[in-house]
Image (cartoon, rainbow, N blue to C red):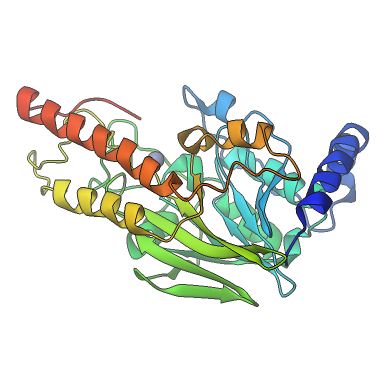
Length: 318
Ligand SMILES: [Zn+2]
């Protein structure tokens, strides 16, 4: 549904007021059961990533409902909403409260999509699926991990000594590269962008304000980090995935893109842009933003492959 900027700005002010007045009442007044803080995950960055973040409008019917360090994006429509990502298991209740704070109902979320199959983006999906009754969809490789609850050795960050678990999602619909999923008038297209994980998926859709429509892209991570011993250039029993990783970066750079959003908000300066939004100036609208995001990723991949050539070992990372 188109959402005029002035209305969005006014709503933001009301939300700010509501946040002060109503925060303790969220759980008591939620119609659907509040998503459980299930299988709380601990990691070096988890507490900082899970810091609360007030929800806000990005453009038109696209909203940020994630935490301070992990994106969750809501795309709303009169026939139901689409939620992209669920952050950590312990983020689910916060995402649900953010959706409610914007005036939307969790039970109207009909479709939940995943960027990539890591605990910090897929961890909250099981609880949010139960709270909403939504269909969950992901790439084939992503769906396998969501169903099993743990990544395989083809994941660059797989560590057999301390495998990461996520709450399992029993039913996951598999989505192919280029496939479009619809909820009412919302149409969201999957773009396979493997590299960071085998199932990594970038999603795109259109959001409008009055007659002005923009191409929105939820760019998946293109960060070439791994556990010790993994090589993107192959070896240690793994295939060379450097060419497909580079192709993913090229895919992102070539997408129609007026607005880029990223799985970690910092990767596309989400909070900095939000801080300077005004009713007449929206810094999220930047037709060069996907190309800039891709250029940073290309630089990181080149540096990583150079390192692998020099050192013959995989670098540690998260
Ligand atoms: Zn990841």
